Length: 319
Ligand code: HEC
Ligand code: HEC
Ligand code: HEC
Ligand code: HEC
Ligand code: HEC
Ligand code: HEC
Ligand code: HEC
Ligand code: HEC
Ligand code: HEC
Ligand code: HEC
Image 1 (cartoon, helix red, strand yellow):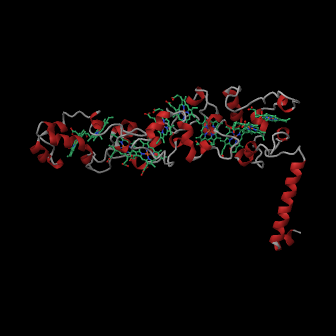
Image 2 (cartoon, helix red, strand yellow):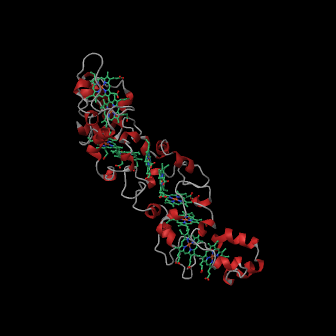
Image 3 (cartoon, rainbow, N blue to C red):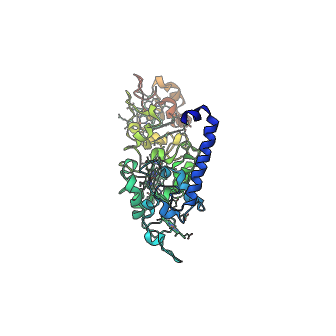
C-alpha cells in the first residue's frame, strides 16, 4: 500500500485528511481522551474546546505532546480532586490558581514552575530582587496565551515598564537605547530571573554587559582610559539621557568631575596656552573668556579617543 500511495501523492493526501478528521471526531466524541496536553482528560471533561483561551496552551511549548517532559494541567494547578470531582454548586477552587487576586501564595505558584525550570537562567532566582519582592513567574509569563508577551521583543518592555516607570521616562529622552523602537529589550542587559552581578545584569559587571554589543570598546588598549575599562556608567547612563550619546552630563563638566583644570586647561585660563601641537598659540593669543568657553566645550574635539586607543602616541587620547 505504501508504494501505491507514494505513486499517487494526491490520493495519499486525501486519505491523510480523511484519517485526521476521523481522529478528531473520535477524540471529541470520547470525553475521556486528552484534548491538548497528555493526561489532561481529568480536567478537559469540563474545560473543553469551548474555553478557547484555556485550550490555547496546546499551541505553546507546554503543548508539545510528543515531549515526555511536557506538563499536564495538574503539574501546575495541582491534582485538585475536590475541584474536579465536585457535584453541584459552590465548586472549591483547584489546589493552585494563578489569576490575579489568587489566594495561592507566590512561593507555592513558583514552586510549581521551578519543579521543571529550576536550572539554567533561573539558577539565581532564589534571593533575587524580583523573588524578594514577591513577584511570581506568572506576573510576567502568560501560560495559556499562544504568545507569551514578555518573551517577545515588541511587547516585553510594556510589562517591565508597568512597574519600572522611571526607566520608561528615561527611555523617552533625546538620547536612548532603541528600546521604544523595539531593537533593544530590557532582557538584553538584564536577567529578570536573578543574577550573580548587581542590578540583575546578565553579566557580572557593567562593562561586560556593554561589550556584548559594543565589542569595539573592549580593550585591551595600549592606552586605556581607566574610567572606561572600569565602568561605562562613569560617563554613560544606560536607559536614556537628555545629553547626547547617553552621557550623564555634558563635557566639559563630565571630564571635570575627575580632571582638575589647574594643569593643562589652566594654561589656557592663565593665558599661557595649550601646547603648540594643540593649537596653543591661538588659544594663547585669544586668552579671553571666549577661548575658554571654546576649550570647555571642546575636550572631545582634541581628546577624540576617550574610550582608549592603540595609537603609539595616543597617551592623551587625542588620536
Ligand atoms: C466537573 C467539571 C470540572 C472539572 C472536571 C474540572 N473543572 Fe475546573 N472549573 C470548573 C468550573 C465550573 C469552574 C468555574 C468556572 C467559572 O467560574 O468561570 C472551574 C474553574 C477552574 C479554574 C479557574 C479558577 C479560578 O477562579 O482562577 C481552574 C484553574 C481550573 N478550573 C482548573 C481545573 C483543573 C486543573 C482541572 C483538572 C484537575 C479541573 N479544573 C477540572 C469545572 C471543572
Ligand atoms: C505550565 C503551567 C500550567 C499548565 C500546564 C496549565 N495551566 Fe491553567 N493556568 C496557568 C496559569 C499561570 C494561569 C493564569 C493565566 C495565564 O497565565 O495564562 C492559568 C489559568 C487557568 C484557568 C483560568 C483561566 C481564566 O482566564 O480565568 C483555567 C480554567 C485553567 N488554567 C485550566 C487549565 C487546564 C484545563 C489545563 C490543562 C489543559 C491547564 N490549565 C494547564 C498555568 C497552567
Ligand atoms: C512538568 C514540567 C513543567 C512545568 C511544571 C512547567 N514547565 Fe514550562 N516548560 C516545560 C517544558 C518541557 C518546556 C519546553 C521547552 C524546553 O525545552 O524547556 C517548557 C517551556 C516553558 C517556557 C518557554 C520556553 C521556550 O523556549 O519556548 C516558559 C516561558 C515556561 N516553560 C515557563 C513556565 C512557567 C512560568 C511555569 C509555571 C507556571 C512552567 N513553565 C511550568 C516544562 C514545564
Ligand atoms: C520580571 C519578569 C519575569 C519573571 C518574574 C520571570 N520571568 Fe521568565 N522570562 C522573562 C523574560 C523577559 C524572558 C525572555 C528573555 C530571556 O530569555 O531571558 C523569560 C524567559 C523564560 C524562559 C524561557 C527561556 C529560558 O530561560 O529557558 C523560561 C523557561 C522562564 N522564563 C521561566 C520562568 C520561571 C520558572 C519563572 C519563575 C521562577 C520566571 N520565568 C519568572 C521574564 C520573567
Ligand atoms: C510587578 C512589578 C514588576 C515587574 C512587572 C517587573 N519588575 Fe523589576 N522590580 C520590581 C520591584 C518591586 C523591584 C525591586 C525594587 C526596585 O529596586 O525597584 C524590581 C527590581 C528590578 C531590577 C533591579 C533593581 C536594583 O536596584 O537592583 C531590575 C534590573 C528590574 N527589576 C528589571 C525588570 C525587567 C527587565 C522587567 C521586565 C522583564 C521587570 N523588572 C518587571 C517590580 C517589577
Ligand atoms: C543597554 C543595557 C540595558 C538595557 C537595555 C536596560 N538596562 Fe536597566 N540597567 C542597565 C545597567 C548597566 C544598570 C545599572 C546602572 C548603574 O549601576 O548605575 C541598570 C539598572 C536598572 C535598574 C536599577 C535602577 C537603576 O537605575 O540603577 C532598573 C530598575 C532597570 N535597570 C530596569 C530596566 C528596564 C525595565 C529595562 C527595559 C525597559 C532596562 N533596564 C533596560 C542596563 C540596561
Ligand atoms: C543588546 C545590544 C546592546 C547592549 C548590550 C548595549 N548597547 Fe549600547 N547601543 C546598542 C544599539 C543598537 C545602539 C544604537 C546604535 C545606533 O543607533 O546606531 C546603541 C547605542 C549606544 C550609545 C549611543 C547612543 C546615542 O544616543 O548615540 C551609547 C553611548 C551606548 N549604546 C552605550 C552603551 C552602554 C554604556 C552599554 C552597557 C550599559 C550598552 N550600550 C549596551 C546596543 C546595545
Ligand atoms: C570617560 C567617559 C566615558 C566612559 C567611561 C565611557 N564613555 Fe562612551 N562616550 C563618551 C563620550 C564623551 C562619548 C561621545 C563621543 C563623541 O561624541 O565623540 C561616548 C560615546 C560612546 C558611544 C557612541 C559613539 C561611539 O563611539 O560609538 C558608545 C557606543 C559608547 N560611548 C560606549 C561606551 C562603553 C561601552 C563604555 C564602557 C566600556 C563607555 N562608552 C565608557 C565617554 C565615555
Ligand atoms: C571617572 C573619572 C574620569 C572621568 C569622568 C574622566 N577621566 Fe580622564 N582619566 C581618569 C583617570 C583615572 C585617568 C588616569 C590618570 C593618570 O594616569 O594619572 C585619566 C586620564 C586621562 C587623560 C590622560 C592624562 C595623562 O596624564 O596622561 C586624558 C587626556 C583624559 N583622561 C581625558 C579625559 C576627558 C577628555 C574626559 C571627558 C570626556 C575624561 N578624561 C573623563 C579619570 C576620568
Ligand atoms: C585644542 C585641543 C585640546 C582641547 C580642546 C583640550 N585638550 Fe586636553 N590636551 C590636549 C593635548 C595636545 C594634550 C597633551 C599635552 C601634553 O602632551 O603635554 C592634552 C592633555 C590633557 C590632559 C593631561 C594633562 C597633563 O597634565 O598632561 C588632560 C587630563 C586633558 N588634556 C584634559 C582635557 C579636558 C578635560 C579638556 C576639556 C575641558 C581638554 N583637555 C581640552 C589637547 C586639548
